[in-house]
Image (cartoon, rainbow, N blue to C red):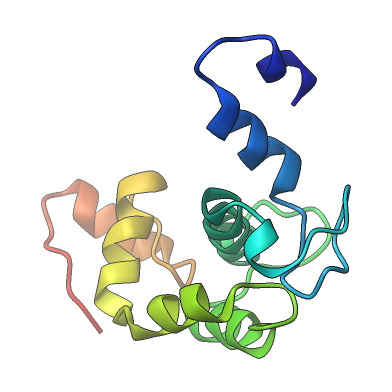
Length: 130
């Protein structure tokens, strides 16, 4: 965040980098901010970053979770780690929407780690919502 502090017009990016490890209940770091004192962009980034980390195949410390398991963990941490209003929005997105997002950012890997489905998309298959 110190690098961004010296660049004009990047205050929002600086706040995102500084605050994305802050938790809704104030138990995060580096400043122990809580609730609305955490910039909204940082709150959103924390939720999305956590979700992405949970479903990734290449985490060295554990196997990836499926969408349902990751979503349950995020919902369970609403009001503790994550902004409850953002979690409510996250929970309302249907599984097909998450599948399309995963396809767009991860080369077609299914949100449940299904590489066969990714191969089908590469051959011209359609996105099918669950």
